Length: 124
Image (cartoon, rainbow, N blue to C red; front, side, top):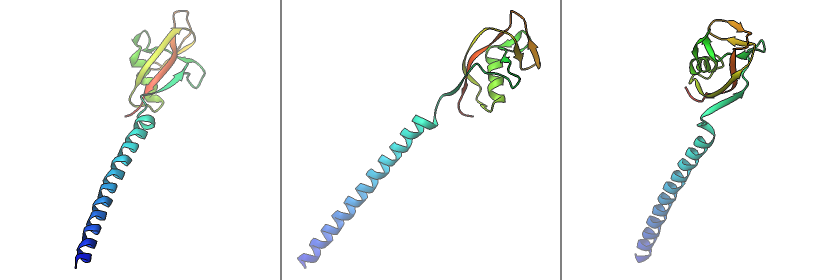
């Protein structure tokens, strides 16, 4: 009879150990998934150096001629290239020709400013 009791205790200990191992395995798995997601899936932006239109012109930093400059134009460019979260950052410089997205016009003057780099935000 004591042998059966000892077997029950051993079986109970084994199932408790198995449950503890299962909990540990799940915790490690969740941590690993979270780490991978943070490292690869949650990148903050997609950078593009010297964004260009299909015609080769640089993207003007104004969405409309002389107005809505900077972030509005960067956001629109990102949306048009499939990055719905808009722009994260950008740099500009004087250059020509540039393409004014909102007006579908080319600026070919010395005062034109275009994006030299643009990083679109990741996510929705």
